[in-house]
Length: 107
Image (tube, rainbow, N blue to C red):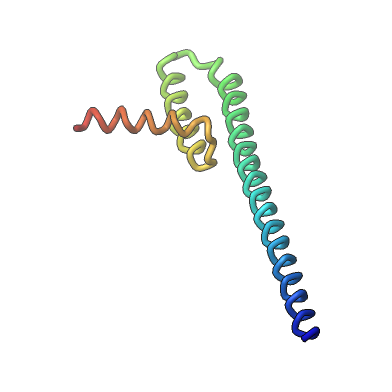
């Protein structure tokens, strides 16, 4: 009877180890997901900073405010699309509101 008891304890220990490993894997996946999210947000912020610096340097020399406004509106569309692709959480409600506004006008 004792060998069966040892095999039961061994199986219980293996199940416990498997459960611990599963928990560790889930925790690592969660950490990786958070790290990937921060990387996407950092990429978005870098691009946004570059666009703002570009605007400060280039648009100050424009004589016509309409062309500056056109460029800024084009950049704003790019920023919104890029924020959606980078899954920036703060921008997602803004994107949804914009699409709701356009959707209501066509109804």
